[in-house]
Picture 1: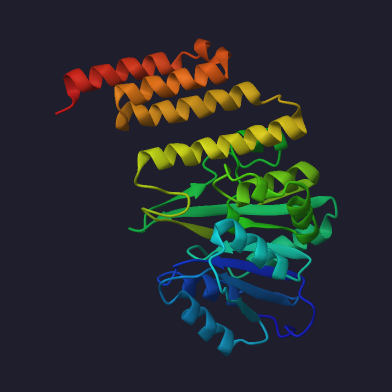
Picture 2: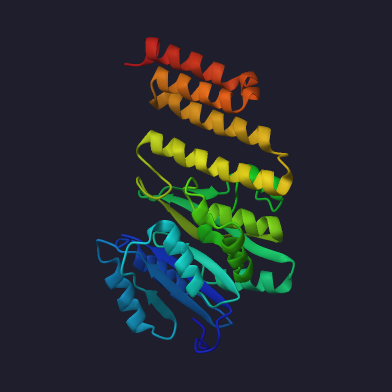
Amino acid sequence: MSSQQTLEPLVSVCITAYNHEKYIAKAIQGALSQQCSFPYEIVIGVDISTDKTLQICKEFEKAHPQLIRVLERDHRLGMRGNYHDTINACRGKYIAMLDGDDWWREDDKLQLQADALERDTQAGMCYTFSRREKENGEYTIYPETKPTTDYKKMILSNPAENCATMARRDIIMEYYREIVPENHPEWLTDDLPMWFYVAGRMKVIFIARESAVHRILSQSGSHFVDYKKTIAFCDSLVNISLFYDKRNLKGKQHLKLVYKRENDALWLLSFKGTNREFLSRWWKDIVRDPILILNPVPYVLFLKKIFYRNFLKP
């Protein structure tokens, strides 16, 4: 931890938390353990929680008053409001995002990313590999495919995990002024449209380190037990990509994205949904994008669904 915390911070660590009693201490400790040659701050936005999340954060603030600021709420803001309000409170030139149930596993994460952004004034964000870790300790490395800094490829499959990314604060604030995510209630996540905005404006840097861990919980803001909620969330991710594809790439990736949206939904419905749900979704997609009638995947998935139900399902 830097000894210069009374100076203006170069980096703000933006932690958002809601009912993260079991995990928030690890998130804060990972931020406190950062070894930096520059001053940084930790800003924690705690939405109205029903557990001891706020109490734990306040204990850390009391122990590190020059480094940690805890933002208390007098009413529930929700995910989007908490993100926006906490980012507004950050003072650093750069912001490193961290959800309250994730953590950093390397103590030079901030130093590496800030140095990379300071060296290249044309770069707007920097990300690393991350680990997606299940509650039983099993994990995979993300992105699973080759990391990319090419915007067209990022739009198809975002490689930048929120907890593994740092970006310029001024560009993030432009995102809030220009895009106004509050006007897009259909977007079920707040970090993806932000990163797509930054990557569409400036260069992206990738560092081949596993700096962060994204905790995969059975039920969270991006992981669900209910397959219908999973489909809605996946649809939202593709719809965000379609928005930026139209805005920044003149729709060059439209066909690939609508194929992806349909295939992902129907693949899950081929296992979990009824025949009626499958056919209803298929028809809805074709009405929205008639070119999808040429997509061969749904035909194969439906045949598989019929075969499984009639011959293989116990």
